[in-house]
Length: 455
Image 1 (cartoon, rainbow, N blue to C red):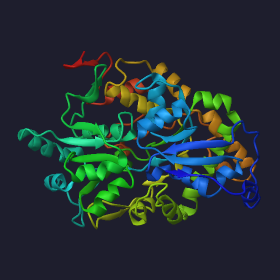
Image 2: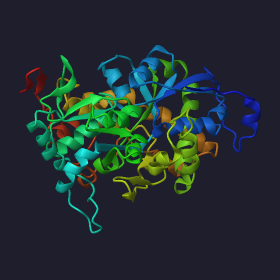
Image 3: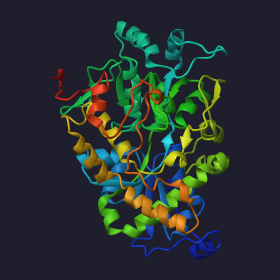
Image 4: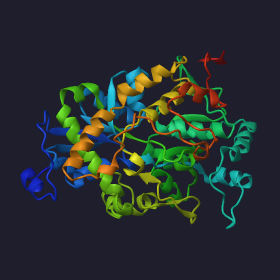
């Protein structure tokens, strides 16, 4: 599905309330890819609000069938850049799957995902979940409540299956994190086994995001982890119950990124800056004035060329609430964050967390020293480009001076134990120590083969 830019660019630019500092662009006509999820919003907003045009960019936004097709399009040049899973640029750069040097100058959002189970599984889980003072399930819900359900399925000779969107997706790692925190092994990858199901208590497999609800309804899977609006869609259809959001798994966790090839950035440095400027402006618009623009954002995203879901389904999470069981609507003002908390800054520590999860589950087959994690993060995440774009916006009066972490070394302060579901703090400066602290997962010296974990 294409959204093609037409009309008089000059007229649109001159009527803009602010005037961008026009860069000498190496490439003006761009095609950018996305998957139909609400967190593609910065791309849609940058297009619809004219921010791309303000930078002299003529952009086509093109929905992609799945994450592999999207990545292949960026690598082969069919797409100039794309809304990406944060793990994709990292995995491609280290050669896990398709090898290519992909970078990100812009993180697209924080939070935004959930884990949903079928109605049958939910009814089996409920006796294991304490209630709050209102008689509603007490959140966050631990995967410990799911463990007896999995045992029940296994006792009947039936595998317990859950869907996630891609092997290097945040959704895969968040689902694995939640399961492992509750004592359930989500399985390991090895060089000869890309299923990730070695030694697994719960079998995880790939399902494209828009197909999650129908796959759940068909009984092919018993639950899934996905971004919005596909958890809320299960509630509206009456086929499933979201049991936890990723905000509850890891408060203000990083989510998608905007990815381009290193070659594109090297050959088109001004175009890369212009893209980053437009996306930063879109993120500011999405969060400004306490999310005052979210209703308009919902109307944009609901269009078929973008997400194409019913507005009320998208609004259920985009406007500061989240519905668990039907009628159990709770305030979650930070379910989707696009600019607050330096959401758009590409932190090295975010990249390192993804790399630790790749190692934890065997996608990185052998232990690496801390310096390898630091060096890999710096190859892929480009805060230098981001801050250059941000400085231009501040100088042009389009962004607030205090909206950016000018003095950071690229690492967030450690995430405290109370903000993570398993009660273990995360410090991106100590990836090896962090991996050793996780009860389930590969440790230093361990590898995986077809028979299981060795060492």
